[in-house]
Length: 130
Image 1 (tube, one colour):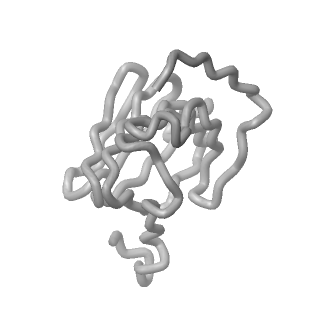
Image 2 (image 1 turned 90 degrees about the horizontal axis):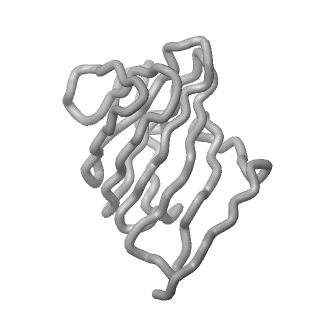
């Protein structure tokens, strides 16, 4: 690896089927140990139940208010400054419970790759949690 500055264009943000907006800040094969994305969840929205295989994820809450569900933990309210640690293959989702966008960094180790993402909503029946 060599020193690099990543310049990010805010209009590169895109809506993903999980139910939130993602702006990739750093996700490159040249830096395979980590990826960083900015996630934005609109007021009243909840992301899909999902898990990442072989990848640890951390949510670093920047703005807004939410309720996160991770593994077998009871739902927890999160606010700016909170960090949510999500082990590999642990089911997860987050809801925006506030009136403004919920914005957080999603930091993955090793870096996020689409092949590690598993949508758990397709496994659920009648709205049951996976």
